[in-house]
Length: 98
Length: 245
Image 1: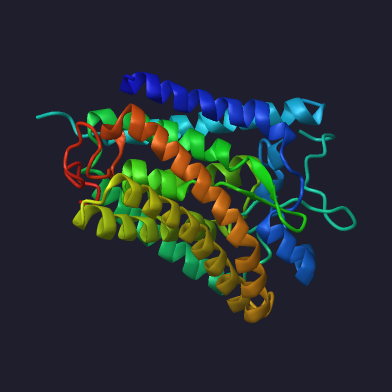
Image 2: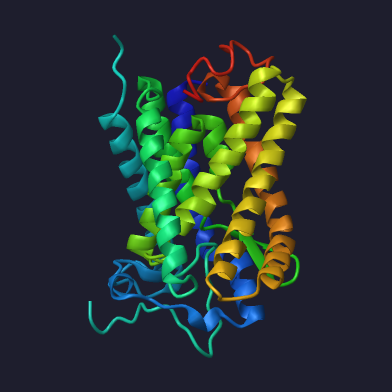
């Protein structure tokens, strides 16, 4: 398999996970959430002004009503966005062949 | 956008947290110390990683960031009404080495906090530390010692990869507990026992998925791995790509 193919496969898998699988995953609280619930410190959670204005807070894509597609769109755009940031950093700092 | 309520629910309704610590759980002092530690680690990583960014690794950094982000959205159910999700640090270390892995994890955690309000801003240092830096340190150390020095066989290598993945989750859980306890949010013993108990199972999920992903890459393109077993086809000696500088 060429490196290009493997990378494409990885990216495809990321898009499928974020876009097609994420709306259907377990909605049970995760490790920290569960412990916070049990030990009664869940209510200490604060959302600062910056995060209240987060463009897609809680993985809800802005302007999309149905929760499934909103999460799917948020997931795909998030995966692509951090991918682009990672790629941009690596390209900027890459070591050119001598 | 006014009128559209995107605020995470709290109070009566159950709040679903991701693994990351939200703001409000940590004291200012603990959050500041964690920020400094994370920042120091990332600055070192940025410096070391400059020597490791060969042309063919460049796209891998982007794909891994996207993949880790996506994987962290997939909560699978574990025992006792809890769910867990892949952290991805171990996979990033096996593919990129610990330094680039730190950077990838910081990009993911930063994106989650700033765009999706997942994990706090003040707590971002702690989250980068717990989910990224500590896991990268543990996995990088173990892989370097066991795979690098001993030139491990395929079976031992995959075993070590699995163990790293499990350990990275446990270390993240332990560090989170320590930070919460040091902040006076909850007693150390209480939170440590609860966090380690739930994350034991989550860690097994992490190990299974990490080993599966590494096996796939090992079969297809072992040369893309920063750490490889002895018998990988066409492999350059481990470390030759400069995973540990």
